Length: 47
Image (cartoon, rainbow, N blue to C red):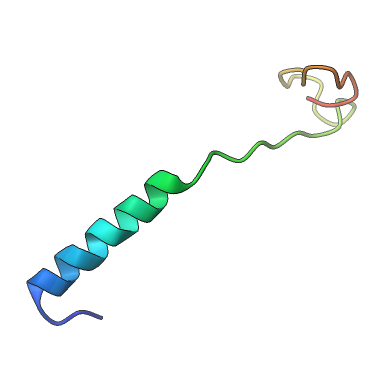
């Protein structure tokens, strides 16, 4: 845990920059289990 505010600010900025680099995950489920889901293009068995 940082003890001074400058170090805390640096770690906070680094964390935010790292999070900005992450992409949203893509998750699908079998259409038989989740019939109300949004269909996956070219995968009629997935929603």
